[in-house]
Length: 491
Image (cartoon, rainbow, N blue to C red; front, side):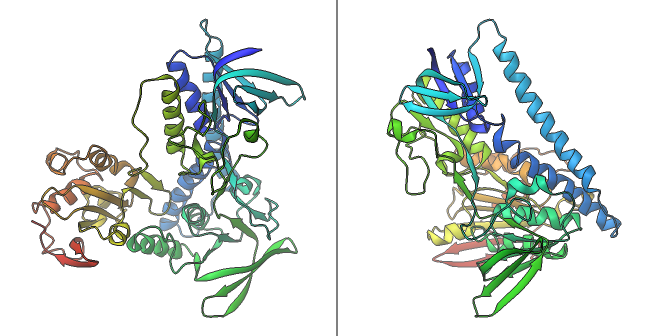
């Protein structure tokens, strides 16, 4: 029986990252994956949807000049497949070369991993053969899958989840999206931006993206509607069924009215479920938490040599979080003592139109926690790069403590290149620094990140454009005791 310092079950972003980190410590590691290396990070998820999003926004830009332009579905699909192939090939070749090294540390098995006890793992291969190995440590990174409602027949062709997008043979003429969270809004953005699909979005709340500030939700919804999408606000799904190869769904609104609609396709986007079945957790005594995923304490399960990372813990279902968790788990196994992971100030991107980048607390969080704070908000229309790109829809918003230190609590950027603009502020939050250093740096011109600099200058009352003049484009607020007051200067 082969012995390994670490056996990783699951070859998605988390498992792959954890295996590679173990090599850094000179450990012998086995990676087990039952289907495809890369998991949802490549297939039916992050890479495919973001490649689609990139193409959708390009098409939307063309349609601004040529309203009758119709994209070629097969050409778009070919671009997505090429992106998947490129990333898959990189990872596969990387693994093959690692396995050919003279001082070999990395091993890979294609098959289903099953925990027999805290130190033994069984691998069942596609041909039915079984192999058992000894594991000094185990990292569970089996990921998640789209959640499916029990009362809806999801066939992944007519009623589909994100896993079924690849089954589409053309742009649907009409589609309803169930779920107005990030993923639902992303797919609504993608299909409405191609201009070939009449998109409807079922939103149980009064506005989309209820976890984010209202000004963000407003600009995203406005742009969805400008692409022909319709949002069913305050609507509960009564039924959804397939009739004559189409989808009929009935909605009940909060005021009591019911409506019935017929569309070509339905996309279910109501969250994800951890893949914890049939991997032998009970054999090792690994605990499950109240959310139906693996219980962990800073990536370590209740069994000291078994760790978990990524969507299987459902802490935060993001690729960057899963990779970080896996690497952290491996350091805890083999490296020096490290401080626990913090989930407080994670940089995130929402691939909408325009894109949304965030870090730290939102305004509504600060209000809910009754934290006195200051807010500065700068419209994209004042940014030279945005003007040059003719992409002036959006804003920057920075939230700081209401004191002389003005420690950054959070930031939101909505607009072109938003994701590229946020990392400097994320670093300030991470290191608990003030705003002056970043405000006084020489930023490249013209660039979107100059908008961040101008926000920081507004906090210090030394911005180029003055809030007292451009009151509709530069805004400053002081918020205390749940009341926000707009001011012309903050210091």
